[in-house]
Amino acid sequence: MTPTNSSDCDSPVAHPEVADLVSQPDPHQADEYRPMIKQNRSLDRDASASTMSAKTDSVNSRLSPWLASLVYPIGRYGLLPFYFRGIEVLGREHLPTAGPVILAPTHRSRWDAFMIPYIAGQDITGRILRFMVSADEMTGLQGWFIRRLGGFSIDTQHPAIASLRHSVELLQNREVLVIFPEGGDLQVNRSCQLNRLQPGLARLALQSEASQANLGVQIVPISISYSCPSVPWRSAVKICIGAPLNVADYSSGSSKLAARQLTGDLQKALQALNEYGIAEES
Image (tube, rainbow, N blue to C red):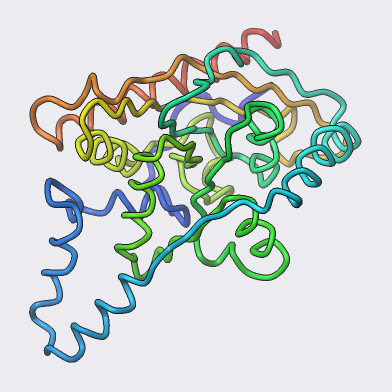
């Protein structure tokens, strides 16, 4: 696959996905959620209480078994083979079969949301995928499907404490989250081989790991490359899955430094996967 630019993007990510939401400056350190509440102290008590109520509504993600049993096979054996001339998957053995996992794919197309279930959907791994999706993506028919296939929304303009707490709880329950660490601005992402990652995913992973002894959160880097950036009819796809990063290895010392190091290692892993996929094509 030929990248549009061999170097990383230098501009900040315009991020409509939850990874950037979690990465905002330090409201989620140590005592993850109380600092966000304390920011409202300058507001009057009634306004603060109103904001608090809006930010602590419960968040749920669920899977409709009958819908999943219908949608996943249709995508795997119908839609994707019909649209794409070929989908090659390398490194599937790196997908953990148990324990809390964050799948961290590159993001170049809306087709990415179909590719992740293709390589790691419940019909293949037996594990439910919990997509973290910006609130504006949860509208209409698309939102109807996302909500019933294990996804949940994040309001990037007005971050909800409950959404972050729900993410941690899913990992505590040994489930699988899907977060696009580059963000959801496809135009920006397509302008380079790999966009600069924000530390939100790493912070969430570290907070989850610290919340429970020996939790064992793993982050799996995944590179998704298309033969043409616009992904036209009969494009080819190459998906490279890398070895998991063990979050516990980054849990000692300063949380800020740990998040920076984990983010940097994830960036390097994704870059290496991209380059490997390109080398295989040539």
